[in-house]
Length: 157
Image (cartoon, rainbow, N blue to C red; front, side):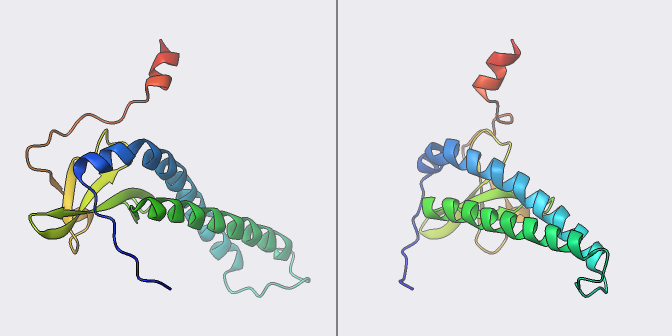
């Protein structure tokens, strides 16, 4: 494995990347929620059971596990897509993956610019060790109302 230099984003660069990041994160958030639910179902079905051909639940357990494996592979692909852009996907307060951190330099120290699915722009930041709980509005930055998709808005008129 080679040492990778972390890409540092300016606020402008993070906001410019947002259309693609938003699309990937939407898929990631939905899929991570499905994976979590499927994991819970598998856990309930398998509780204390060994998967054997004699167990009436074995076929369902194997099917749920296969579906989970496929979803986990896709989940990892989406995470890799964001990381290739230089962004870092994170679990939001609700447990699904709907936050994205962009490494940045603020006054000579590394911080994360922080964006959550549904926000119109990157307008928050936090220290590396504080996470979502330490989010603060960027100095001199306006927090815009939630994201609105022009295509969806146009189709509703």
